[in-house]
Image (cartoon, rainbow, N blue to C red):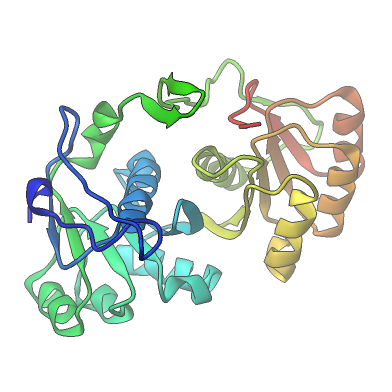
Length: 295
């Protein structure tokens, strides 16, 4: 089905009605199966994120507008296996968005409680998805061009209609600085950039723990103790991992990160006290010069 033929099952709740219609910035895509209003929101969130990694094997799971897990892999099956390891519970009912062709191995992981979006599918994968009743979306617009279709964000409220440009922020080599005596490895920097991109697309107050191009914990939308929450969830997987924050952190956060054996922290800004404390614990610290935080 093209967008003009899609009939949404319901809105955010079963008793709410919802509709979808094409606009001048609608990408080319097809839907097989039934979808809901919330799944469309999940698809948008997932595509916004996966378009950051359009030229590699990338996978992400989303529920509502919350990102559950993200990974990059040597193959797409490897990337999907990583997110299953990272957050297996949410995987069972999440929207899965991937950057490359889906094969039968990946299709076998899915249930009718999932929805998957991908640029292509093998014939065997489609056969498995249809047999299992898994709805699937084919993204015909190249992911490398996806950002050209992101429109201004509009929210209609009783106080008036709010409009803002989309968040197309990128890391700037001039502002991306290692500020500690402890220097990161090339692999740690790759993980830091990966974690930062995930944090950028999260809900406000985002903390991401990542290692080997896989998220091990994502905290978002929390007003306090986000670092502790993420490290508790990551547990032993925080050893030698990266901590990315879309907001300035405190000395308490660095102390907590050291207890979790974090190897590198990437944050918008860092004062002298933070830098000295990071060096004390032999933690590399990178600053980006700006924040994606939402208050």
